[in-house]
Amino acid sequence: MRESSVSERRYLFRKNADYIKEAVPLIAYAGGLTDLQKRGGTLVGRCPLPDHADNTPSFTVWPGNNSWWCFGCGRGTDLVDLYYHLHDCSEMWEAVLGLSLELGIELPCRSEAWHRATRRKAEYRDVAYQVLGNVLKRRLFKTLVLPYINLIVDSEEHERELDRSWREWADWWRWPSLAEDLIAGNMDALGAISAAKVAADRLAQETTSAESGGLDEPSEA
Image (cartoon, rainbow, N blue to C red):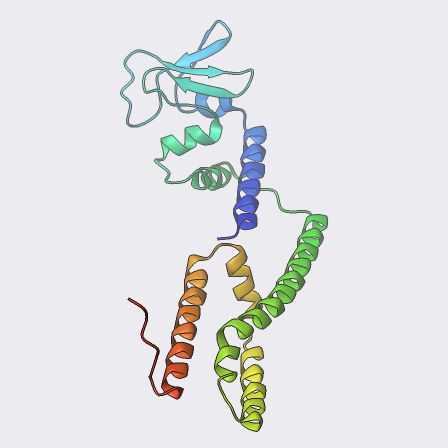
């Protein structure tokens, strides 16, 4: 998964979560779950969370910053977190969406300016991976394929095989994607290239040995 995609999701979550919290005062939501009594600068009531039998009121709300904390079960932060624990959500995203549906709040959409900027970034990125893919294509051909071609002694056969092999190699459409995978540190892509290099070196060595009749000079003891 690309880092940019992760950052984008985090940004979108924060924006929607902040929008929900600004639209719904925590006091109003929590007050519909439990009876809150004023105590100094806070509001206190029994914890509304279903897995906490709060016999002594320990659920505290701070109206000034729209936050809460239960001193009995040791949980609390904001409105989204309250819904998260109240409905046993598996992810905070579920809480944001659940609140929007329950309260009839439409989550904000991206502006057209943002979409235009995103499209431009995608175009620049695609061009960059196309260029890097071409570099990768040439480098890997030189490393993995050319050593076999150079074993051909006949010059005409060598040129024919060189032309055919390069056309087949260059026509592979996934070069930009492979460049992207390698830059992202995709271990499968790195491992595949490493294995191909080892196999290429082994085959070149075996071919050279076979052409020389398999008579390698004995190594010194």
